Amino acid sequence: MNAIDLSRVHAEPAAERLAVAIDEIARHDATRVAAVAGAGGPNRSAVTYADLARSVEAVESALCVAKPLGVVVRARRVESLLAIAAACGRQGVSVALVPDDGRDLVGELREWLVVDDSLTVPSGGRQRHSLDSDPSHVVVATSGTSGPPKLVQRTWDAVLAAARLAGQWQGLGWLLAYDATRWAGIQVWGQSLLTGGRLVVPESRDPDVVARALVDERVGILPATPTLLRRLLASADAALLAAARPERITLGGEAADGSLLARAREVFPEARITHVYATTELGEVFRVADGLPGFPASWIGRELPGGVRISTRRDGELLVQLSRDSTEVATGDVVERRGDRFEFTGRRSDVIVVGGAKVFPKRVEEILRGVPGVVEARVYGQPSAITGELVAAELVLAEPLAEGATPESIRAAALAACRESLEPHGVPRILDLVKRITTTSAGKIPRRPATVR
Amino acid sequence: MKPTVPDAISTAIRTVLHDTGRDAADVTPPMLLSSDLGLDSLDLAQAIVLLERSLGIDPFRAEAAARPVIRTVGDLIAIYTEAMSRS
Figure 1 (cartoon, rainbow over the protein chains, first blue to last red):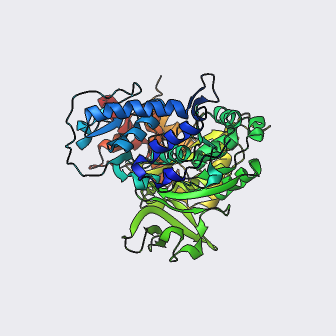
Figure 2 (spheres, helix red, strand yellow):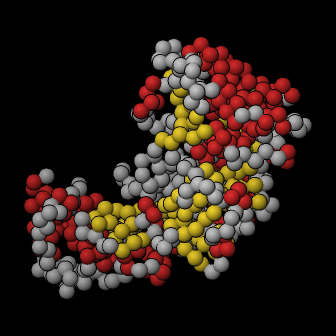
Figure 3 (cartoon, rainbow over the protein chains, first blue to last red):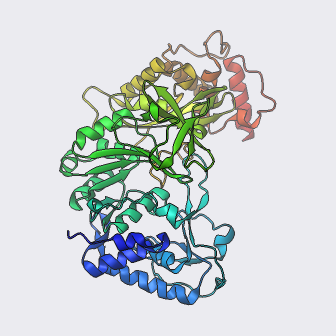
């Protein structure tokens, strides 16, 4: 792959950078693939940077005529989303990337125009005033791991702030296992486009499909939640995993525990494994690359790269100050000192309160996942009129089970392991064996009780 | 088909005892939940979730304000039978 000088791209204002990058790459290397959809499946399709540049131009022309207050993207195809976002950025039109889960539009978004895969901009709607000096922005939804997702407004500068742009990053294959409308997903496709990369969207999150996409599309960068990576490592075909060669694995969205990091190193010994701590509200705060869970205790109170300072509240909640003159933000994430590290205990809002006693689901999940025969676990609070909540859990068992093991014996072993390590109120009282654990659209484990059985 | 109320209650209590590593003895209506069966509030909460699954109701959720006295297995049977007849 010939390196293209993209320095011009990075000198542009953030809002225009995506469109400029697409044009630049299309001009120098028209056949370079920008995105592969349906990777790892029978309906694979690819679009080039030249295709993408044409789509961006078409959307931009339509935006010039319609002059909408803003655009809501409702695209099912990732290349449409990329084209619409890039076009809106360069035309100074605010854009909302709203997950496709039927959420009603709220507030000002009701007056924005919806653009879908047809890439046509509908006529009508209120037009932007030519003197409107409000800079265009990006509206995204938070992940909704522990509550209803909320929409937040970000500048293009913030959206693209974390993009790594050094020459060595050019032309790599990026796996997009996240929802392209979520913060984490936007980071992946943003970085991929700005570095002339190949965005690889697997046909599904099925472990074998993801593993096949890694191999077939020569994915170099594998960003994932710990939940997605754990499922991939536990369930994907071993031969496919052995053939995959990710250079970098970037974990984020949830805390990565030591056993997952160790397993990832075992399966992908050549990969550099990084754990990013970021929130939709703050963007990226810090990254840990030493292969250990949590972060070094010495980081507390010290200025980290980028001017970030972190500290903890008395109850262990992590506080973040992005720069000297910004205010300290409570993250909702609780950390605990273990030796010379701080490790994540869980989200404050995830705490299950059983008869007044607090239980962090992550701790229970770690114990359950350590039981032989258990490949995945989810712990949540089951409402109870007697104790407020009860600890409830779902387990996915290995297939096939080891010789001599039965679902019942593993269930009993899981309960025994919890009784050994946890206070009585922390031991799951409801323990179901399930075929799979449904993740949120952000690829995380949901903390709400199952509504359908 | 839904089990009868006494059967469902007996099964739920035996499951609770089994899950917590205790012997699942026979469960009969006169038995005291705490002193005869050794059930604490967590055990009872678990049994109620299990009963909601098997019988489809949780009479305690609706009556949180005026919680009836539950001392024996028979008390539980009465509460669920009464709630089932109303639902």
